[in-house]
Length: 86
Image (cartoon, rainbow, N blue to C red; front, side, top):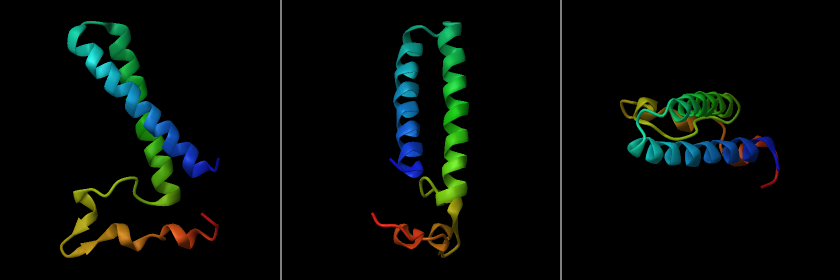
């Protein structure tokens, strides 16, 4: 598995864990351990997304990438421009 796929896989795992923690916290809002884990996972997720974006461009297209009539996400390399086979 290449680094890009490994980053996406780890981000997806954290997305799942965060969703589950949110559901748990709906019924256990005072659980300090769950709140701590949620903050920990959220920070790790943000760090992984920053690492992904520094290497491969936007993780998701967001409104902040739209400047007037220009979509900044198209400025980076396209997947086939990385010089490796799919």
